[in-house]
Length: 142
Image 1 (tube, rainbow, N blue to C red):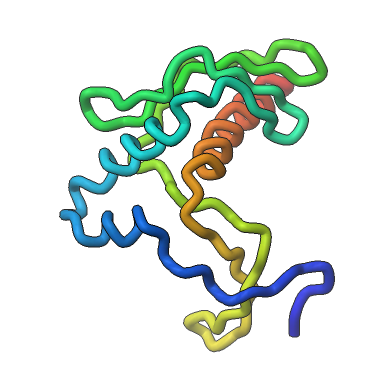
Image 2 (cartoon, rainbow, N blue to C red; image 1 turned 135 degrees about the vertical axis):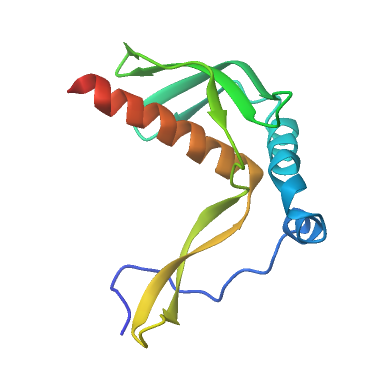
């Protein structure tokens, strides 16, 4: 049984970077993912995450110990949101949801919906930074 309103599609094929990372030693992968994200998003200066406006003020860049670092300013409805710069990400994701779903059978034999994700360096970067800022914004509201 499928869920109404969801678009279902087969699982996407692995991306180029995913295949390249699979051939590298596990310990090298986090730095390589951070480097790929920093390079792919080097020109990004602003984006929206839901109702939050995010301005990248520095980065993204890779720290000497292989973390992805980014400095931002954020606002909601024109009002500043307190941020905790820099945001640091160890082993950042390179996959982002493509908006479709697939049905799978879990370990207990039940059919479940899983979101389809695919290699998307811009989408993954926006998602991790946006979620980090949104989390701080939610805590600041309380």
